[in-house]
Length: 52
Image (cartoon, rainbow, N blue to C red; front, top):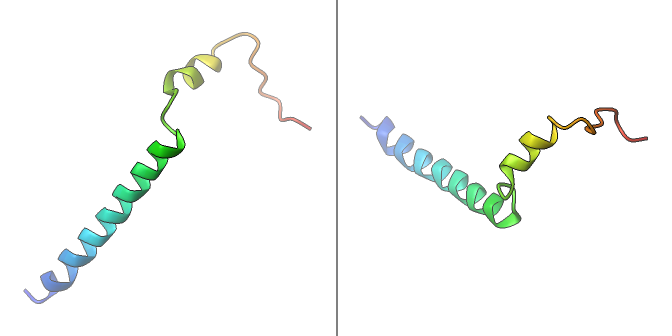
């Protein structure tokens, strides 16, 4: 039962870090155009060769 005194705060702390990271990614625009990337790979003019 004493382990819960350690595990609950640790899990809340890690969940908070995950939530902060999610909101940071939202603010930076990581999720702005999810369909554009999916459609861009299906076009004929897609270049899969790396740039030099």
